Structures are given as C-alpha cells and as structure tokens.
Length: 192
View 1 (cartoon, rainbow, N blue to C red):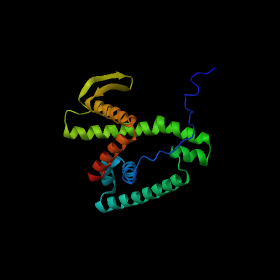
View 2: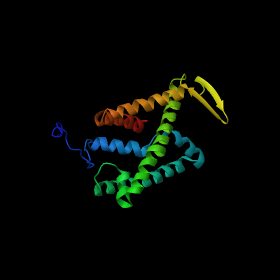
View 3: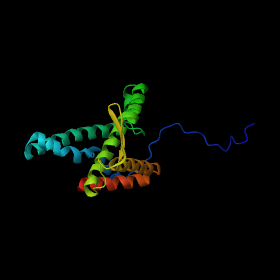
C-alpha cells in the first residue's frame, strides 16, 4: 500500500516553453547577446588593425549584416521548434540526440564558462579605471609559483568572482528578476 501515492503529482517530462518574456525583454535579451561585451574590449584593437575610421565603419556594417543573418536564422528555428532549450533542441532534432547532448555539455563546460570569465575580466578592468584599487597588480594573495604557472588573487579577480556569483544568484531567483537585470545591463551597454 502506498499512502502518499495519490498526493504526489505526476512528473512532467515534456519540455514546455514558458513565455515569461515580453517583446521589450526579448529584444533586450537578443541585443545584449548579439552585441556582447567584447564591443568594449575589441573595438580599439580593430581600429588599430584597419587604420582608418571609414574602414572601421565598414567592418561594423559587415559584422552587423552577418549578425542579422544569424538572428533571422535563429528566429526561423525558434518558430519551427518552439521548445525550451535553444541550440540544444535544434541540434537534437536536426542531427541526433547525441549531437544535442555533446553541444549541451560543451556549452556548459567550455563555451559559457570561458565567455563568463572573459566578461568578468573585462568588467573588472573597466571598474579599475573608475576605482584604482581594483587592479590586476593589487594582490590580496601574492602569487605562488607552481612550475610555469602562478596562483594568486588580485582585487580585479575578486571583483570578477563576486560579479559571477552575484549574477548566478540573481538568475537562480527566477525569470522576473533576471530579465530586469538583463534589461538594465543591455540599456547601459547600448547607451555607452
């Protein structure tokens, strides 16, 4: 006899798309993802490489057109397969569950972790301009040499770690707060 069997709700194994983002939220999410934070870090490097403001503008126009093609492609895929999971779902349906699985774990272990770390480093560097105490040379834990590597903790690294922890915690609280934070950051990014 199972006394609690009737009170336990069945497990829903179907991935359902929760439509918790409005038009503005979705636009801000896509714009924030497409523009990326690299725009603040890479622009000066590109300007040095192309050598003239006109060519820099051409580079931005070409990359903008390429980004538009990618965005339209993802829009089509999302309309064809309105399921939660994004690229994982598209790869799973187009090729096989193995490719979706491999992409999902690669995204989790390599792609997103590297991107998150790079954005945190960039944020810390720019914060160091406003607050000189935040610096890669201001060590809280002096470098410990291990072979060809050095383990240390600088104030810039600490700020980056705290930023990652704060944003991770924010996203665990749900979509409502997460979309507000995304909208604020995208507004700041596009307004800069």
